[in-house]
Image (cartoon, rainbow, N blue to C red; front, side):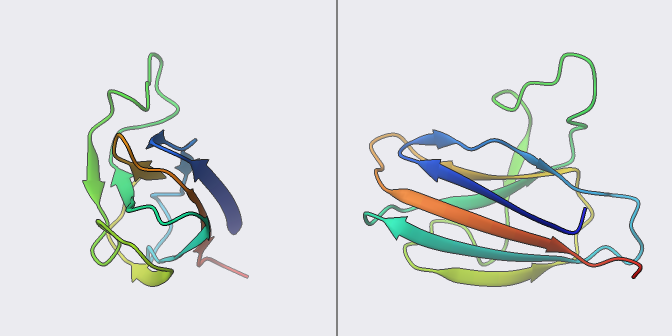
Length: 108
């Protein structure tokens, strides 16, 4: 996985982006951009395996990315905690559109 984007419009959880948790060292660049409205949103990560039989993004256990929780402006961070999936989350009653760009460092 090198470069991916995902977006979310209004409340809920975006599609997930699976990342390579075996990449050493583990490094992700995460850049969230509000493209419409004024939403409060979080970028979250999960250790649950999105390739497992019966996986459901709505019942997976999610954690807030440090620096990207309850965000109200364009923000970018680096992440070094190995994980398996990344997504955008907006709580009920939130409106707007957020785009997330993800780059995972790896061998050339």
